[in-house]
Amino acid sequence: MTETHRWRGVIALSLAAGAVGLAVDRASMLLLAVVGIVFAAYPRLMADPEPKLRLERRLSNSTPRPGDEVTVTVTVTNEGGFLPDVRIVDGVPALLSVTGGSPRKGAVLWPGRSVRFSYRVQAKHGKHPFEPAAVVARDVSGARETETTVAADTELDCTGTETEGPLRDKTLEQVGRIVAQNGGSGIEFHRTREYRSGDAMHRIDWNRYARTGSLTTVEYREENAATVVLLVDARQAAYRATTDEPHAVAYSVSAAEQLLASLHRDRNLVGLAAFGREQCWLAPGAGRSHRANAQRLLATHAAFASLPPTEEKDHGAQVEQLRMCLPSAAQVVLLSPLSDRKIVETARRLDAYGHRLSVISPDVTADESVGQRLAGIERDNRLSELRKAGIPVVEWDPETPLAAALLNRPRRVRA
Image (cartoon, rainbow, N blue to C red; front, side, top):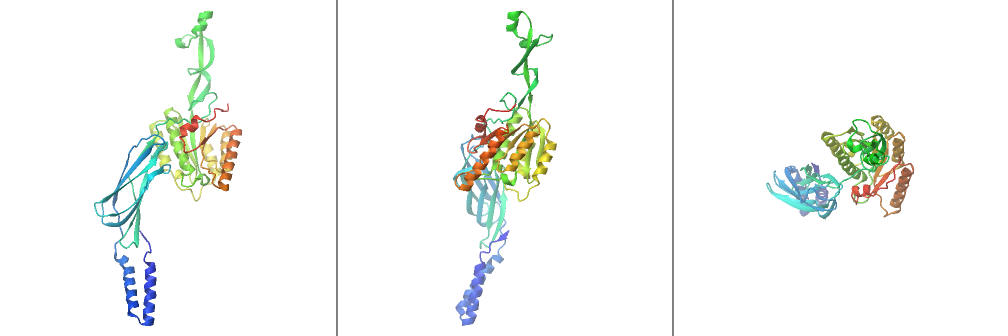
């Protein structure tokens, strides 16, 4: 509860009127002063507003496709006493844009009464949980107000599109597979050898047998599941955004959610890490419980907070700590807007230590001012530097689905 000081000016005017009334001996001025003091004292006699509200939120489509419009209908019911002035702001997910209506509503709520309002959002790829709605309730005088939140579990799931990450293989473009040097069962030809007792019939080269009469067995390169760590750049410098748009960290978290689902589906070992106010680390693993744990971290860990950190830990120390945690054969997918030189040096450093690193960079630059254009040029230079170092970089315009950006990525990888 806070005071709005709405009547502070009335007290000053009342005292001034009283002083003038005494000085000139005018009863009317004294009466005016008394009336003003009564108005100013009236809020002190009122009880503080104590809102007891229940919120229901319904989506016209909880599993839309990217680009679809979804109507959100919010109903707020007063389960307490009379509320003469209630203002509600629904908790729209950071990545969703309001395309129609308003997520704000003001109302007078009698006990047991409800207020309903609707607005539309445009779906983007990923899972988008709604935040609790913010509520401000004022008393009759408007001098005191209570701020609170009211929640309802609501999630918009827009993950129907397949998303495959830019992992670095030696010959394949398939996501989540590492081509081994030994032969066995697979899809890429490796070599032929003499037939051995017990070899599978379907691996015998029957065409060669028909020509030469000798039995040979075909071997293919084996494919192994990848060990991948999704690394989110959540430093203060990464909280960049264009006007009225979500910041780059929100986009990076959304991309991590999408890649997490894709990599787990392909039975890879997937881990999660972040730089920023706090270091986040989840060792690579597989299975439903591991995936649920990773999703919980993305939704609740302090490293992925919606507001930028006021202080953050030493970045160099966080890099060294990450190096100690990374398995030796782990690939790293860095999710970052590449907003400064420090993250570029970190990427090159991790790649030089043998962790085959790829970058997905949400583009939150603009060209409306000279400063914004300069920031865009500096980011382009960082992209070029990483590519010259042999590190694959995917530029992602958040207005398009991440799957489309990955599909159109350059097919050039380093062996």
